[in-house]
Image 1 (tube, helix red, strand yellow):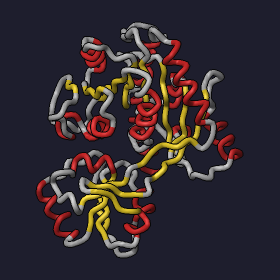
Image 2 (image 1 turned 180 degrees about the vertical axis):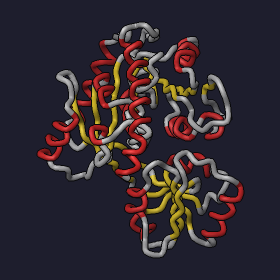
Image 3 (image 1 turned 120 degrees about the horizontal axis):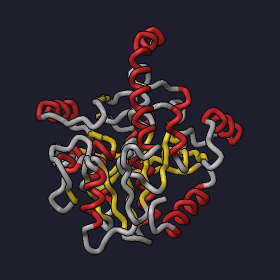
Image 4 (image 1 turned 60 degrees about the vertical axis):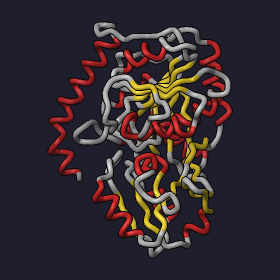
Length: 341
């Protein structure tokens, strides 16, 4: 691995230079960044994936949805459509992408939209009646044509951007210096019992700016797996022979939480679009056993496997400490902001 990184390092220098020039042009207003007259919060990362953007965005939805007319705007990665789409009863993972479809399925009081051109997506959302009062941008840290008013940068425990390298030598989309754009940095997927002394060491490695706050979260797994027909306790499911299916960036914690000795485990690429042959293979592997998948994969598998055999495991993002401070910071920004700053 070290040899491969050394081999790719010259290409990483070129990629870093290109992204640095692009960022410089935006910072100096040579390239135009568009702002809009309402609170806009962007959630993203420097790496190519696996930092837990979806549960963190859902935390923000739960925090804001009852207080404001809320909308989310995503690219809609993996969808088979183009342009702006506002989710409605005909929406699916194929039309808006698995993560937006998950938001739409779980949070009926908010608007969920997708558009690869975030500026045009914002304009479409603001043409609606009533207009959204707050907009969450999912995976938009590098989308600099649209300037959010508040940036939340995620980095995974054990895979910190401070220890990584830029593509293709590593997994960073842009250099570590880009972390300076964030208002808040969250270290995700931490061990639930991570000591405060260890948190302080990690914070020091991240070298936050004076104005940045660093928080730590873990993944909180549900005590039940759910299906279209009901739910079953995780304690029971662990002792049941089953097929575990995951098409997410880093599925090992999901397997660790549920797997038994006799389970069949099938791993696919992130945002994988399951073919008919793969569905048949899963059905054959399962025989009379249940199939348990991640919530994001369930968005792409539901309706293609029997409801009484296909289950998913919900997750949430949980702050190890100072969670109330985080919520207050977000609510203060939204409450006091009438325009992006």
